[in-house]
Each structure stands twice: as structure tokens, then as C-alpha cells.
Image (tube, rainbow, N blue to C red; front, side):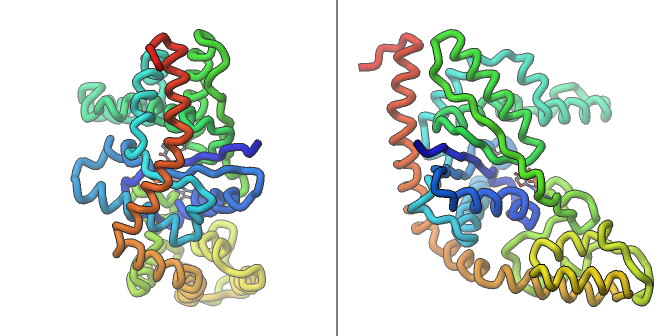
Length: 333
Ligand code: ADP
Ligand code: TRP
């Protein structure tokens, strides 16, 4: 039997190069393996914890969907859907809530970070924390347990959430017998954490990203903004600590990377490196950018693909939820 590999991306900002290298690219590679059934989705109800503007949420969700497809996701092989189209997930979320201790949520890192920030600013502990943010890990557990995922590829920051999903599943199984499958996480150990324009991790939260599908002129401008030191062109430069080199490495051919490494040693101007980086990035993005433009202009087509995916996901979720409810003691004819 094929193993289910499942992951979600929440639509809370434009997808950037870091998301591609750290999440989308490895997930698309896993999707090619014959012994896996991938299930990839848009975690739009997770997005609702932050985005409360109707149009923004809608556009960001379409943006995530179009990004996956433009980069090569094949919806005939991947169960590809929008979380909000699977009502069973929310029914399961409530069920799981009744098996999740509040203490477990208190320890979840995203909530804890907000509380710490409030403490620092001498505000009430729970200032600005909605219940969606507080119980976020339970919804994520429902995403994973509903489709009986074996493997969940995630970034390091999400490991705790997978552990929480396992904890909740164990409590449930302890009460009703082996029912929920315990998921394993898969962290891309060898994938680079891409630096952003300021040298910190590229992240929506730091406003330092290079979005994937912007106009080439904008792409060039952003690349020109990447922070460098003030060494003169002829000075040898350290490639291992250079943000520009880290980005270049991910998109250039091995030969190009070697030649750039040499240029760093013999001396090269940052302007030249930036021009080369633009060249390789734009070369990689050209084709998917066109596909993305087409897809984003046809929301009906995106809806059609996502609704078909939702139907496939529900063909697993509906009978499974029925079985769970029967075990709990709800009458299920
Ligand atoms: P952001 O930090 O922009 O809010 P998310 O937390 O939504 O991004 O991350 C979505 C996925 O992209 C996660 O799997 C995460 O590990 C990956 N990711 C995000 N930023 C980077 C980065 N700079 N380098 C590598 N992977 C990243
Ligand atoms: N919480 C994840 C993130 O912020 C997104 C997500 C929601 C997810 N549900 C999931 C990831 C289920 C993996 C599996 O990146």
C-alpha cells in the first residue's frame, strides 16, 4: 500500500523563493516517487487566523494554488485541495479538541511567542490572540489525521505541531483502540534556509522576501537590494557567508556555481554577482511565471481543479469520520 505524504501551505502572503526551496520543491520531488500518494493542500482556514479581508484571503488562496500548479504539481497524481472544502476536517477538529489538554496548547510555540511578546511590551498576556491561533495545532492535527498521513514534510518550525498531532492521536487511540495513524515528520536536512534581502531568513514575517512571480523588473530591483558588505571588486570574497551566493547556488548549474566560486576567490563586484543571480533566477522562473499568470487569470479553472481534489480527499475523509463517530458513540447508520 502506498504511503500518504501530506503537507499544507497557508495563504498568508505571497509565496517566495524560501517557500519554494524549503517546501514546494522537496514536496514536488516526493510526489514523483511511485510508492507515495501525495496530498497537498491550501490551509486557508489556518490563514483565517491572520487574514480577515475577504478579497485578500481569496486572492492569496488562488495564489498558492496557482503557484503549486505552475511549478509542476500534477493534479491527476496529487490529491490537491483547499482545506475549507473538506467540512469533515472541522468536525474532526472539534472531536480532537475534546482530547487535547489546554496545557498542550499553552506550550505551542506560535502562541507562546505571542505571549512572550505581550509580556515584553507589558500588555495583557493574551492581547491579540484569537482562539484560532490558540487552537491552531488541533486544526493541523485534524488535517493530518483525517487523511491518515504517514509522512508530513515540514520546516523545522513545524516539528512541534506534528508531535502535538501524535500526542492527540495517542490519547484518542488509548480510549478507543488503534484508530488514528501516528504521522512522522520529514524535515529537509540538506535544504538551505534561504536568506532574505536583509540577510536574515527569508520570511513573510520579516518583509524581506523575493516573491516568486513578480515582474522581471521588480525581481531585478529586489536582487539589487540584497545586503552585501562594502568590499571593493578586486577583493577576494567569502562565498560561504554570502547571501547572494546561497541564492545563486540554488538556481545555477553546477558548472556555473563552480565558476562563481572562483570569481569570489579572484575578486568580482557585487554588481556583477547580482546581474548573474538575476540571470539564473529569471531563467528558472520564466516558464512557471507564464503558467502562473494564465492560471491566476482563470479562477474558475483553479476552482475546478481544487474541487475535484476535494472530492478525492472527501472519499477518504467521509467514511473515516463515520468510523470515528461510531467508535465515540454517535449513532452512525
Ligand atoms: P514564512 O516564514 O514566509 O511565513 P511559512 O512559515 O509559511 O513561511 O513557511 C512555509 C514553508 O516554507 C515551510 O515549510 C518553511 O519551512 C518553508 N520556508 C519558509 N521560509 C523559508 C526559507 N527562508 N528557506 C527555506 N524554507 C523556508
Ligand atoms: N502550519 C503549517 C505552516 O505554517 C501549515 C499547515 C497547516 C500544515 N496544516 C498542515 C503543514 C498540515 C503540514 C500538515 O507552515
